[in-house]
Length: 228
Image (cartoon, rainbow, N blue to C red; front, side, top):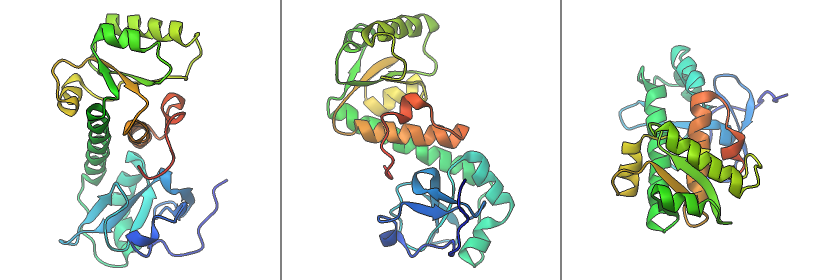
C-alpha cells in the first residue's frame, strides 16, 4: 500500500530532485517513486510546464505520470493549490506532456542510431536478432503484419522461445522512425546494447506507462528506473 505523504507537495527546486527517490503526488496525496511521477514547474508566463527531464529551475510539484492523472489534476485545479499561487493550466496539458515524452524517446533513439546501436532493414534485422547484444526489436506501428510475424518467429527461434528476453517496441510510426534515424523507410530495426540504448528503453517505458497506466514487462525488464 502506498504511504500518504506528511510533508508539503512543493519541492525545493531542481537541485533537490537528483537525490530524491520518492515524492508526493499532488493529485492523490500518495507517495510514489519519482519514476512514476511527472514534475511540473511554473513557466515565465505563469503557466504549468512539464519538466520531463527533471532539470527545469524553480520549485515544482509532482503528479502521477499518466495521461488520466494529469487530465484529472487539470480539472481539479491541483496546480494552483500545489503551487500556492494562480497558475495558468492549458486544457491540453496532458496532451502536451505526452508529446514531450514521445519527443524525448525519439531523441534517445536518434542518439542510439548515431552511436551505431541500430540495425535497420528486414534481412539485417532478422540476422541481428540472433546476436547476444540485442535489447529490442523495433517495428513501426503501421508495419505490415506479414513482416511482423516473420520477425516474431525469428525472435522466438533465437531466444529459445523465452518471452520477454528481448523487448518488442511498436510505439512509433514509420515516419517517426525515419525522422529519428535519418533514413527512409524504417519499418523494422534492432536495438543493440550501446550508448543511448538503455535511455531509449527507459523513455519508451515511461511513455507507455503514461499512455496506459502500466509498463509492459518486455520494456521495463531492460529499462532503468532513473529519470532518463
